[in-house]
Amino acid sequence: MDVAAASRLEHGVLHGGAAAPPQSSAP
Image (cartoon, rainbow, N blue to C red; front, side):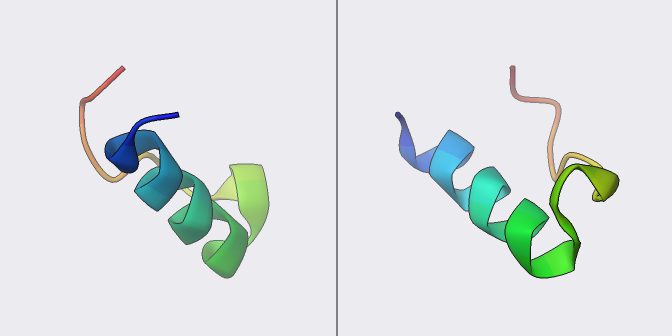
């Protein structure tokens, strides 16, 4: 997985998983 996806995944986990909105418009 790419860095952007990994970063978004980590943010999601830290902020409550799938409840967290995407940090950018990246696919």
